[in-house]
Image 1 (cartoon, one colour):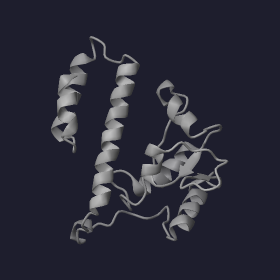
Image 2 (cartoon, helix red, strand yellow):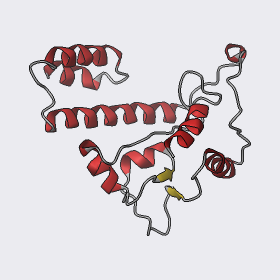
Image 3 (tube, helix red, strand yellow):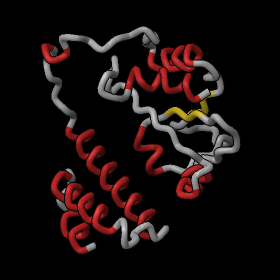
Image 4 (cartoon, helix red, strand yellow):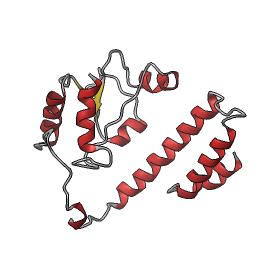
Length: 174
């Protein structure tokens, strides 16, 4: 089923996305040891397991399908790319199609100004993701003699380009 989901994801994610930024689609491999906590937090019990909701809810919530009211929904009708996209269209009251292409004159569109709350939330999300990634690296003892130099170069790039300067000192001290 993965190719079906990738077809839909390519509409919204990636350099050639027809509708970039409208929906963030992410894939998590629950068979991987590093994702066990995440998968149990969302009660993953079968594959594929598709969830829908606002990104901040995934970062800060534990989800249980028995909850009456939740901002996170289980997508139960997404076995094909067509059905998944139909489900998404229903949620957003939109009319995306699998044939949608990237708008060629995209650079001619007016730039929209960002909502300050969204910018703050995005920076917080990046901070959370950075902290989680570092936690995984340290907990699983992924720093070895042969990977140390690459990790240091990665951290230097991260420090230089991280949107939050709060991490600068912490990352440099690693």
